[in-house]
Length: 166
Image (cartoon, rainbow, N blue to C red; front, side):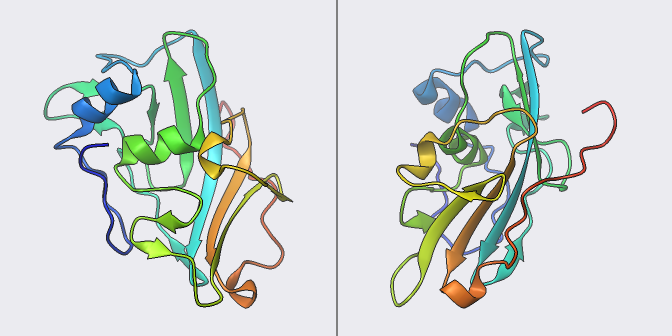
């Protein structure tokens, strides 16, 4: 996937290769938000016990005038899925749109080992299997934590107070 960051956090949105990543993913570069599917999720990311900011404008290239069906508008951690087609979108696709490497061992350049593991939770429940395949369902609270057991948030966030209208 072109342009994926393999560095340490924080990770800004990567725009230089965004269109190429969307093409590789089979996602359209939209000129306006899609209306067939409109859902929101919230994501919290922790690396070594420290929160990582999910930046504004992931998937929105204002300079070239296009956006991805998966994007952010601000740095609250709210993911917007606004697609012209109804289909499942995944956590792996969100990270690919962002331009950050994400697999079962790493987020960017932060990887497991030496007592650190990568864990993904949805609505407070630990997910087993491929974390990239986690489906983005409406109003999910997603937690991605990389660290030792003592660095994982306790308790795990299990819901998010979405603003009215989202």
